[in-house]
Image (cartoon, rainbow, N blue to C red; front, side, top):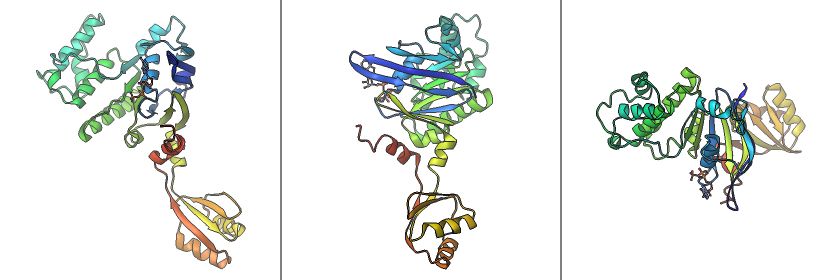
Length: 304
Ligand SMILES: Nc1ncnc2c1ncn2[C@@H]1O[C@H](COP(=O)(O)OP(=O)(O)OP(=O)(O)O)[C@@H](O)[C@H]1O
């Protein structure tokens, strides 16, 4: 997979405050990239840079291989659609009027494609209802429809599920999955709602204090968070023999401790160890959630 966005030691300072510090991010083409960080971590600041709303203080980024200082970046940026902070919507207009206004502002000659866009985001039946009477979820979906004008292949969504009710969250999730899977749109989605991101993301970037502290694919993260049993035993060699016979995957942590992965038949294991005269001192089931992984990553919140 080639990268759609790469940032290289990207920095953004507001006076003396470093909102982004040497940030290195890689978003593969076709990914749904979950950009995770608590309030004030720098998510919106990064998004503002890559959308061209602000200029980096130092460092650079490339969109589809074109560097931000290259004049060709303006053309490449047309392949990108974004909803940053609150969607730019005219409250006294209907969904269709909002899209028409957007088309006019962008100098597009016809309103072709508007009904299809409304259908895509599930707003085809809202008719004469004005945007001010929309639910937050409907407003978000209208914002996404506006961002989708010109058929971008990279969509950037800043906290799109913030404040939505469960139904609204499901609708946005399904829309993002559809855009990614049926329309092959790469998506960068920032959020601090980890459980929700876990239902979507193929890749993650964790930002803390303006620095990307970890980038990991969902597959590797799943492996890092997978279920295991931690054992402390009297004879680690005997444990290895038994685990090899049971064809279980494991990791030796010390002279007496090991971690066993996957579904473990505890009774079979205990009996096999007894036969080898290997005593079990302790046995703990362990399953790390995305939440605990994240908390460990940022040091249990000690940076607050
Ligand atoms: N224009 C600005 N001038 C000064 N400081 C700013 C400016 N914009 C952002 N900041 C500061 O930079 C830091 C990062 O802000 P940013 O909005 O990027 O965070 P965030 O991760 O998007 O958080 P949130 O989820 O709260 O929006 C914050 O401490 C913020 O106060």
